[in-house]
Image 1 (tube, one colour):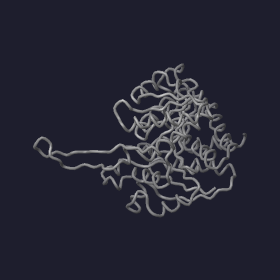
Image 2: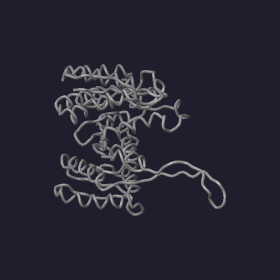
Image 3: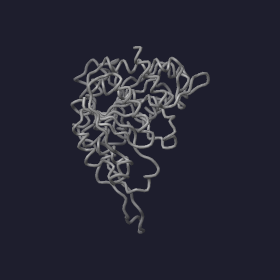
Image 4: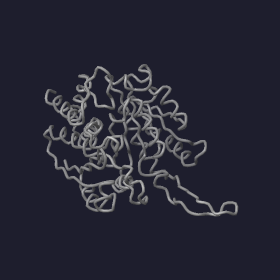
Length: 357
């Protein structure tokens, strides 16, 4: 298993280190190659996605990423911002399908800000299209224009999708729904956006190939409301890049902490980039208190989706659940009566649980 490791910025190196310890404890044959992405790459090379990183990422079977970004790079031109490295690697590797599970572990029911009866047993999968939409649309920019006889700054972005882009992400979502409960909700804003009117039309057409999956549709503003009102009505949600970016973060917080949730970004052949859903958390970087569980669970997703190592993935997931059952918590999920651990100690606890599995 050839894996490109991109620790990134902020807490990225700390949480990635614990995830790699867990991976190596499984004693699976793997080759690890570390490279720079994000702000650390800008500092070292001036490029958020330098050529050497591009080479290693393209040669790898999978990529494990920590996190990118931080306020120290906010003043840079947009092309040099750390986030541009993340967008670039997704685009270059053709990682069009982002899978973000929002699972509430029973041990963390009290960590959610919603009532436990609303979120208990929550298990949602959000499938987000990742390489199209307004984030990549051209033309875009900020320029001076004449507005009512005076010069003003004018900003513009372009939202667009072609039919094939929509259809391929829908097929990923339909297949995922088929493996779960057979329910898929497609989220759009077709009442005002032609882009998502096409999205809905293609969703209806694609549904004909999946008669065993129940397809429903919901406008994005209503979906945001329903995720808070009654999140368990959803099983698999599929949506575009911008809507998916927002809804997946919202769904993550239903679970109590975004620090618990992994993600996978896949190409057409199963090659993937795996990363925690959270950001670089520069406010706690270097303090040894970050939660490594989302990154560890991202390794489980990598083993499952890219390497077909289902048993190994399940071992990691059982170890995480065991650690939570024992009352071990990092600061972001701590509650009175539990034992608070730092990043390294939480990694140690997962390793110990792996050994007795």
